[in-house]
Length: 91
Image (cartoon, rainbow, N blue to C red):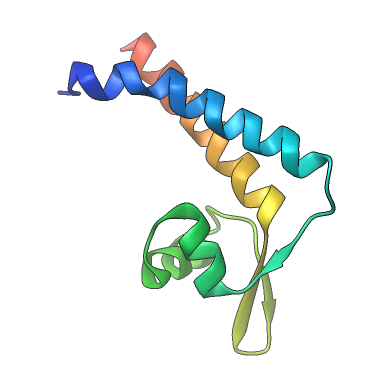
């Protein structure tokens, strides 16, 4: 069961991410390494790499490393958050 307090914070979170996306779209995209991308999403690098390997976050594999687009990561996060809200509303 989802905590009501968590649900009440979702619209604000989506608004914040949308504002961040608008600012980023006005700037050029930035290519991030694994540690930078993990910091952006506030998750661990191992979790980010698991998500990349599972195809759940956009990335480019270069040699032994991964590169991430800041804009694509934020858009993916926003889209997934919106999907989760819609799924919760349907349940």
